[in-house]
Image 1 (cartoon, protein in one colour):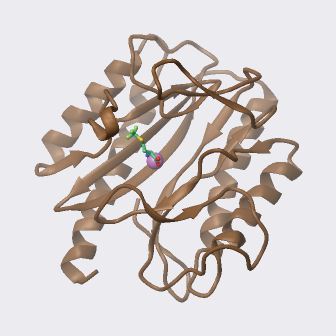
Image 2 (image 1 turned 90 degrees about the vertical axis):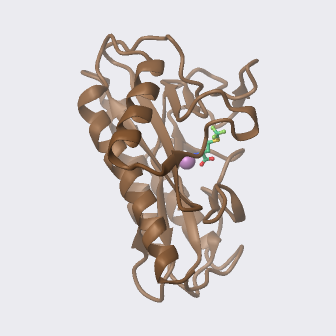
Length: 244
Ligand code: MF3
Ligand code: CO
């Protein structure tokens, strides 16, 4: 990755960050997943010309971004389903700029939710910061997984096992896989310049998941509430460069 490549990646990251920030005001009762999708498409087109939403058409994915409601933890296909007070909406956005992809996700609390649900969202976000602190050259994917798992499990929640974070860059998904569980020192060694998407995903209840008939929406099997946060990072010898 040369200087120009990094600039492209950073532009993609800025686009992702801007969309997720704009959505804080846009996401409210009465708004549908499709409206969130279209808002994001238009915002990108108007403010980041030349950039594209990478998820569109990815392995046949019908949306441009992922919008997931409550027990739907990831890969939600944007639909006509409308947000209600008390929902937790996860939005996952991947933008490509001059061939470089940046990926991030955020969990939006709509109105009042239970104390337990608030705690779930807070601890999952905290797990992302803790994981980022572990993402430096010489550490391993197990160090990241361990940080995520210990934080979330000590709060009494469970971590996603079926789906992981991932490397990315010139494509949306690359090696290594970045699990949300693990042991210090195990897994793949992180190297300077590696681009990774770290994405804690947590459940109030069991981590068992079910994929919907549409082949995409991933649900908690027990119907329990879920949270997801994600950042794209570049590994350095010190603190990572946060791209999104
Ligand atoms: N951002 C998602 C991830 O990290 C990718 C979405 S898959 C898609 O895995 F098909 F919906 F694009
Ligand atoms: Co993502």
